[in-house]
Length: 307
Image (cartoon, rainbow, N blue to C red):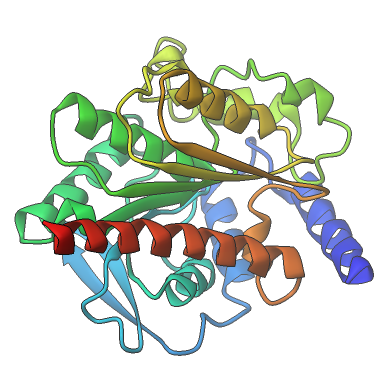
């Protein structure tokens, strides 16, 4: 497995360092990501179907026998400039199957065509539609990776501040939570992160947010009041420059008295879960996320039965 892992690191690192930079044309970046992520099929036994919710294209993932199961509201990553339900189809289908839950993936608007707060508006619009059409918020978990992790956290904060029903649980994978680039891991992990370079973060964030926006808690949740959030699980790789985004966010939740769990994966990189089926750590992470979700919804069901 070590040789497979090394091969993956070399191959993808070479691609990212040469091709994926904030200075490349976004159309080319989007096409490249769609092509790469489409090489492997989604999880078996998961029915995938497109739909439209409040004018936003979405995709449902429904494992066999889970037609009435709780829902994962999943927000894809891609630095807010690329990504779609198609790019995350394999990853999310595996999470849904492992958790024995349905999943819905909004195809939210991307920058630079649609800057902040377009993606947040789309996320809230789709979530509210689900709840307004009879889906109990206590049967929803919200999750996301990278920029999608940022969007998931921002969606929670916006719902809380609006005094609306929030999802029962939240899981984040390698979330990008600080658009100011002030985290210490940008320095301490700069030499070992196989994917990203610290100098790329500011120009990427500049495609989405103004300098003023970057300290907005809905843009950089590390600066947010994180009290009164649902239980949160965070998975992050020890070798990624965004590591301290996760550790600072988790520390803030601890200080606010919230329920949060952090798992730092030794030797792993940004959203390593994408390589499910190719590396044991990817599957182990997904199974741990699934256990967290099953536990939360088992507790919810027990509370309802007791009542």
